[in-house]
Image 1 (tube, one colour):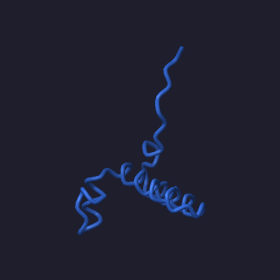
Image 2 (tube, helix red, strand yellow):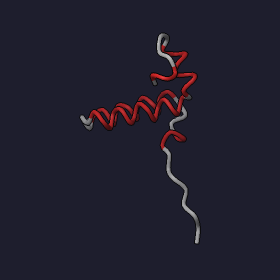
Image 3 (tube, one colour):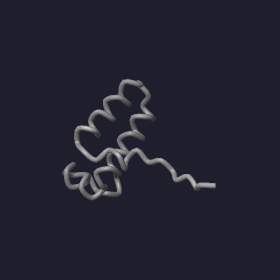
Image 4 (cartoon, helix red, strand yellow):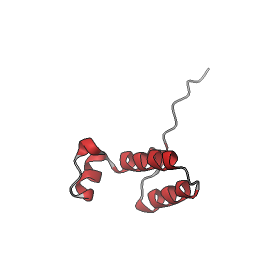
Length: 63
C-alpha cells in the first residue's frame, strides 16, 4: 500500500501570476476565513522572509 502525502497548494503557487489568480478565485467565494487561509498560503509560497521584506513595516511575527 502506498503512503499518501499531504497536499499543499503553496508548493504549486510558484509565480506571482498563479498567486494572484489563486487569491482572486478565493476572494470570489466571499468567505473571509477562506481568504485569510489563502493569504497565509501565498505567504508560505513566497517565503515568510521575502514577504516580510516586501511588505515594509510588518515584522515576521505579525504575518
